Length: 230
Image (cartoon, rainbow, N blue to C red; front, side):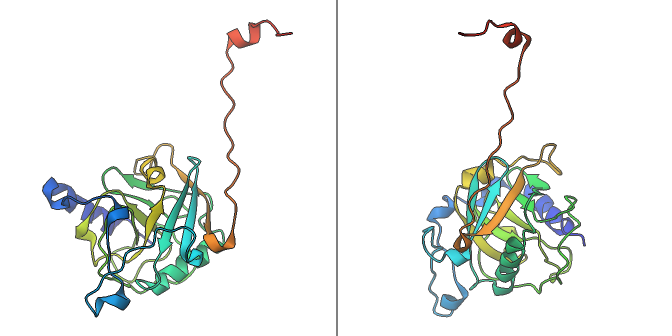
């Protein structure tokens, strides 16, 4: 189940485009996006960044860099994709899965337990739920192979606006807290020392962040020979 090639080919086209094509967008927190329910009236509702509201539709990613990222899931945009993400998160599928493909200036991709970009869950692939949501900074979108109906478990988080992806990948959420932690994800294809999703959970389940273990400080010969303090 190959998930990376289509996204890679899109990247090649993006990198060949002038920088001005990215536009002068502000941070994702200031952006306003459409919901399918309101689009018929030509109105647009903003993503709710309040972590205390609708916690059933907030995904927490506890990363190996010690940070917790919050993602607002939007079932109105892509109900089947949101249901899949919640099902897999609650099953522990994403726990200890690496960000296997992280391209500076583009996106960070995870959700493959094999870490190769070719894996997925045992669940059936999803039919595309393309929607008008733009790929802004912090957008969370489903990865897929060449077929539009091949999304399964892998998803990516966009570092900077990439509007060439619009209506080609299913957008199902947005980072609403700690985008700085996403920016800190290790780059590479694959990264030499990949950042992991230590734990994924739904906010309403009240799963505490995992304990952060830190490596002991390096002990030198001077430390061993230092006098013992009384």
